[in-house]
Image (tube, rainbow, N blue to C red; front, side, top):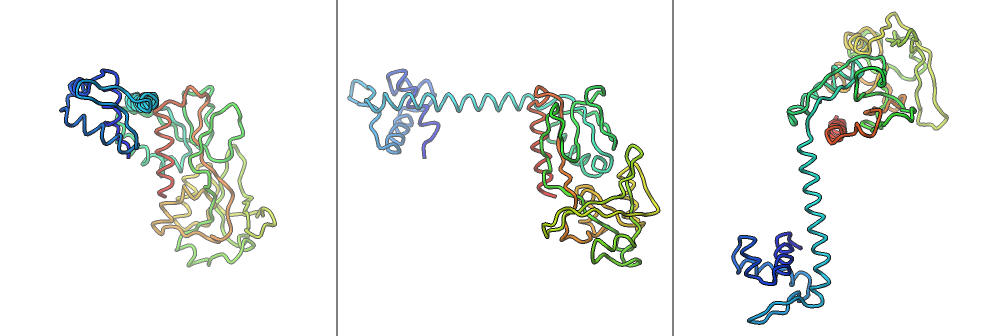
Length: 299
């Protein structure tokens, strides 16, 4: 395996025309420099220098390889410099809008971890189920569910395979029974969500039989325009919720809720990190994107 130190000794020796001069400039002993060249020649199976007791010159193979060695060292330095710039840029204020339930119960703990890792990052958080107008409101980034069809926005996938899931508490299921099929939703109390005065009481599913999506009209005695409140009702045993699996992940893991009809995929609900312009995709934003993706993969 080629070693970076050995390449450095080779290039420096070629530049200075002397192994001892290269060793002095690199602050290593001539013996170490000589060993580095021997390792490199052994690894390549080539003689890079023609040596005599009084002179040192590059062989034809050495002249040819020197160009590649210089380019390799240049690229490695460029990569290191870019990484250092990225490390130095890990700061600034991020103005982020996010949905209520996901924000309070999933994203805020993740953002705490991110800030602990990068303490120069500051937040201004807006939590609401109404989508922020990113051109009029003081928001740099938004975390949004669903397909992002607005071509004027930059959408970076965070959870591309996230879906909605039916869930109810163990207490509710003891009292009212579970579900054997989607047809049985009609006899259950379904907890609905409303946004902009539109009640989402038609729930769509994608059965694996390939026949296409199935939409079920549901009804219940509770409806809210706050997704977090719908989740809380479900945990309290008030009925069945149909929500993003990300929103319910901790409740499902802790047993406060149980997934129903898990073999029937729910509606796709991908999560994206959204901004208005490429210039906003700073090194810090890329770090946040990668961090959120990693957190989602661990759910």
